[in-house]
Image 1 (cartoon, rainbow, N blue to C red):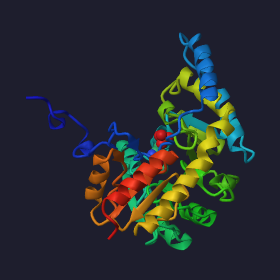
Image 2 (image 1 turned 90 degrees about the horizontal axis):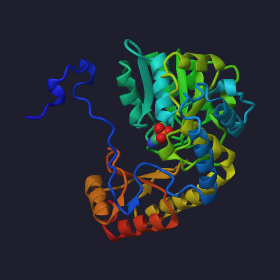
Image 3 (image 1 turned 45 degrees about the vertical axis):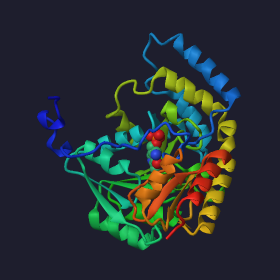
Length: 361
Ligand code: PMP
């Protein structure tokens, strides 16, 4: 008999939990985890390879613990007058969020977010021994400043996650909402802007709210718009004191020299790396328009994916698409499914497959 988790002296609060598990099926069209499905442009890839080769020459030494060059690159990229002392980075924004929770949550503390939202928030929170409390959104998944602030005031959380634009709904949040939540929160407020580059150009980032708000954190990732999911690079901007707090919980040398070199090189080509963003936005809007024509109801999206409702039996539709070689996501919202905008070809494959099976309810 093989050993099961029940046989191990596992932490009591981890018993019965299931790990993050978006399927990694080898299907021709994978539109289930909001990646950028366009590969890194060839000329940038060559430059990244050179940078990694250079870094390999010193790989017998530990990397720069403070990832100085990379922090300068992120400060430049983000603008807003940010300095490298306000930047942190880690292996994906998931690790960035984990660092924040390790510093500001932990046993006896509470983290809060507005459901439905990113599925990793409760898992990351629980892993630090903190309690996760899920608040609510309006029926159309937006947030009302007063009602959002009232929920936060009621729970008094140590950490608030505000995913904006929100995964899995695609919903934007106004600066008014973010400021109201911040004013009501006693603890750290993390605005997760993983999808910000897909928002309308004139939609302001929460970065504009940072001055004078020392408990505000804006988290970003290179996994989406930057087409760098496999490299695992996330980052944040906040008050330098927040960065000092994160130094207390990170593992020494957590960002490998190879990761630092690759990410810094990619950032030097930010404009090219982000070159597919407009095309992806075009595909996203084509998905929404076609879904509507097919009788479904797409939620307005400021991201690279679309949540659509009006699906009679999501599990069945998901399986029918799977059987046609197309992987999308059943996020557990009744009568809804989520699809990532892919290349024009992938997007057409999805839309054609959906049209060939059931229509909406
Ligand atoms: N935040 C949100 C809202 C996400 O959707 C994701 C990835 N799906 C992440 C953070 C984590 O991304 P990564 O760790 O690749 O940076």
